[in-house]
Image (cartoon, rainbow over all chains, first blue to last red; front, side, top):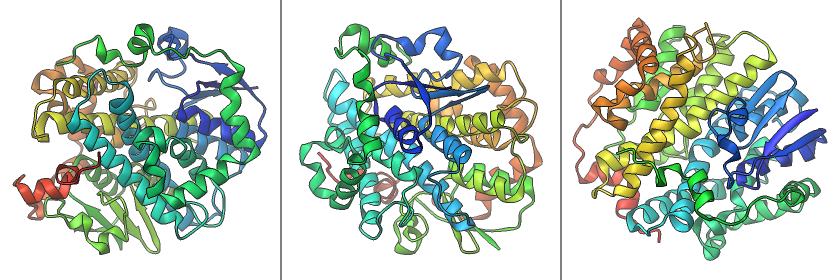
Length: 228
Length: 228
């Protein structure tokens, strides 16, 4: 059975959504990143980047949530756009937009808002600006169409949903007011039975919730290691 | 003919490398990001993210360098790993590792080292640590094999090369000493005739080189716009 290494963070939840939507049987294997499970040699053999999610599907290992979504969509033939060059170009463009833009910049905004030990105005502004800019681009697109690639629900939507549901954490509680179309989209996907199951997956396991010294050192190693 | 929107930045150069390696005819269209060309409505219609590179191939538009590399490799059947599930999983994992990890974190390190108007020790350390960690992962892999996916030169190598050649800008001149295998790989790819042509492409156009107020405002809009 497919092994799914996960935590309650945004990236694993996207993959959980696909697995539930596709009805693929899987064994969930929790990786408690606040206890440092991601740095253990047996996990690094699966994902040398020490991040979740990853999957092991027979003799195939795939890490990075976007890579896993494409791999699983191709394997099952589900949640991909209709065949055609234009659709393929759009799929790839938006998957990488989310992966290289929304994910990292939203992640940096959360880091400086929530986790960094000091409030740094320059960094707070840079990443809030970039996160808002990125969410604004998809909001404008979703003003004109139901899903990211048109009328059909695809892995691009699952990928976006994983981060869009965290808009309040990335930009503050009032931020939804700026992205009404993204809010409509996020609420609609969040109400799907598969999304409810995906979001609840973390509750089946006892992940550490305290952000204490152990957790900070496991998640943000640069706090204790000087690189410059 | 395929239209290739580019500048001299790391991401367009990867796509130029593919085009030269594959011998695909293309029309290069410079986008001078220091003059703000990327924010013009006609370019935003191609890439709403206001970044280079992008391509227009008949009625297909693709943006983001990694997306373009996969699109072109699939279109031409070149520089992809041998067919097989394992190879597909590895290809996707490493493409997204570069896109969501190496690119953004190296980019943040350059921003705080080179462009930010103030020196912020916390941010400098965070991004130098993360850039070094990411480059260390691929260095360890290249200690054991010639290319990222084994013996065969693929789009993963082109993708990595685009950023690896900037290691000194990301981490300082002395940083190569920490990544001998990545250095060997980067030098080898950089000596290929296609790489020499790709790197020289920018010299055919007069891109603005001054990082003056116009350039900073075009490239880092958060400098003049408050988001928090």
